Length: 358
Ligand code: SF4
Ligand code: SF4
Ligand code: FES
Image (cartoon, rainbow, N blue to C red; front, top):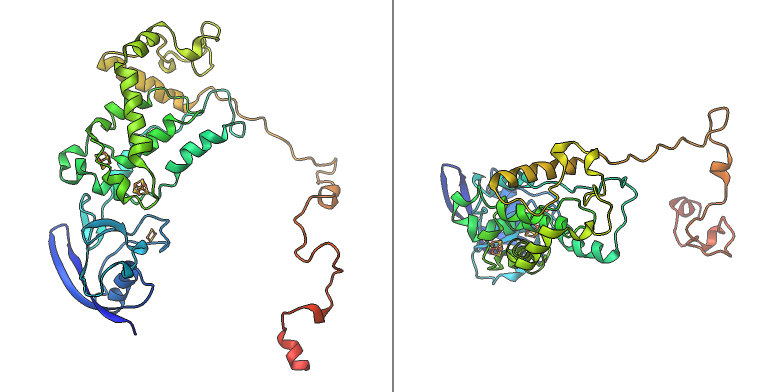
């Protein structure tokens, strides 16, 4: 029997609610989610909470614990004083469905608005090659478990419902940065999208998102600040602007008529051509540019890998050598010089039948 501790949980739904006090048993090694489960089992069977893995990997059990956005399954009860009342409330930025469960569909909507990875034209899946350094750069962002704690804590939307339309939030800034830094992503407008569609300009680098990220992703330092710098370079650096008016760097050694994706402009439908002379400057040109980029991400001209027939013989079957040939296998855990089967007395495992015999 553990000790009895004070717990306070918000109960209610979209129409309102209140904090309810509980006294509940807490044992060594337990986390806040364990206590919520104990409350469900003993005192509040209808208490709603969303969870899945209880291992800090599914991102479902996001809640506010003593006012701080955290994962319930990763917050040990031992981090609180024995006399402290632990207060658990739902994420504040998203509408409450019931008790600790909120409607996080805002995030899925923002995810849908972000253009997907656009593979380079002419390179088939399986032929993509990246430098290890580029893999490592984006690996940090791919650790995201979509717990949306960063989205919840960001003051741009936390207290300003009206900003939600124009602001994607830190989780989607790291996704945009990941794709912008991806050496094989063919889109060239991710920085413009970050400013115009995702509202990265609203972020004033308070770093609250980085502070709450359970995956320790350096959201501000490694994603938001580089994206902001790149967007500023692209838009306001006079030398970069002048350069973009003269030529694109990757067009220097390409024959005329080829675009950055390596596909001849004339070969593509007019709507999918990239603007060749500098950046678009009017809203209509921007819209047309994004539309064109969107069609590039469809990758109309990608060459599909040639299919390979199975190496069957004239009877339509695989030759027996496919199954009997020398194939490299893992080393035997017993070593190479051990005759198999092992003498039964050398085996430590005591089979029940031997006890019967003995
Ligand atoms: S650093 Fe930017 S995105 Fe992160 S919480 Fe602050 S304002 Fe929001
Ligand atoms: S970036 Fe971190 S805090 Fe934000 S959703 Fe991903 S894992 Fe959660
Ligand atoms: S239950 Fe999956 S992260 Fe907490």
